[in-house]
Image (cartoon, rainbow, N blue to C red; front, top):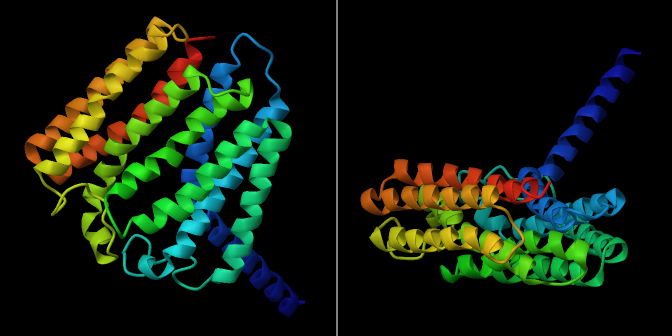
Amino acid sequence: MKETLEINLVKSESISAKLKDYLLLVKLRLSLLVVFSSVVTYLTAAMGHSINWFELSMLALGGFFVTGSANGINQIIEKDFDKLMHRTANRPLATNRISILEAAIFCTLLGLIGVALIGFYLNKTSSLLALASLLSYAFIYTPLKRVSPISVLVGAFPGAVPAMLGWVAFTGTIGIEALVFFGIQFFWQFPHFWSVAWLLDDDYKRAGFKMLPSTPGRDKGTALQTLAFTLVLVPFGILPAYLGFAGIISTIIAVSGGIWMSYNAYLLFKSCDIASAKRLMFSAFIYLPLVQLAFWLDKI
C-alpha cells in the first residue's frame, strides 16, 4: 500500500511538473495579456448590441491557443540562445525537459486549433489575422532578433493584431476603429519593449540579440527614439473621440496616460539610467489595459 501511494505521488508530481513546463512553453501570463486585448476590444465593438458569450469565449480560447503556439515556436527557434541568458536558461526547451519534436507537435496543433476556432465560430477575416500574426511573429520577428534591431518594428505588427482582432471578430470587417486600436497598441510596444530591453540589455547581448535601436544600446539615441514613439500615443488617444466612437472620459484617460508615459520616456532620455527605464516599463504595463478598459467602460 505504501509503495502504491509513493508511485501515485510520483506520477502526480510528474504530471504537475509537465503541466508547469507546458505553461512556461506557451508563456501563460503573456498569452493571457494578449487575449485580454482582443476580448476588451470585442466588448467595445459590441456595445449597443447583444453579446454572443459563446463566440467571445471562442475568441479568447482561440486567441490563447494562437498566442501560445507563437510563443512556443519562438522558444523552439531560440532554444540554444535561451541557454545563454539568465532569465531564460531554465525554460523547458533550454533544459531539455521538453524535446523539440514534442514542442513542435504541440505548438502546431495548438496554432491550427486556435485559427480554426476563430475562423469557424467568428469569421474568416479574424482567422486570417490570427494566422498572419502567428506566422510573422514566429518565423519573421523571431529570427530577425539576432540580425537587426528592426525586428522590434517587425514584431510590433503581430503584437498589435490582438487589439484589431477583437473588433474584427465582432464586426467582420477591418474598419477605422480597428485600425485606431491597432495603432495605439502598435506604438505602445516601442516604449514598452525598449524599456524592458534596456533593463535586459546585458542578457540579450549574451545571446547575440540586437533589441535596442542604437549602438551600443543604452544611450541617448535609444532614449530619443523611445521618446519619439511614446509621444505618438498622445494624439492617438484623441483619435477615437475625434472619429466619434469614444467619449470624453476615455479620451482624458488615454491622453493623460500618453503624457505620463511620455514624461517617463523624457526622464529616460535625460538620465539614461536603469531607474528611469523601470519607471517607463511600469507605466507601460499600466497604460495599455487601463486605456483599453477606459474605451470599453466609457461606452457602457
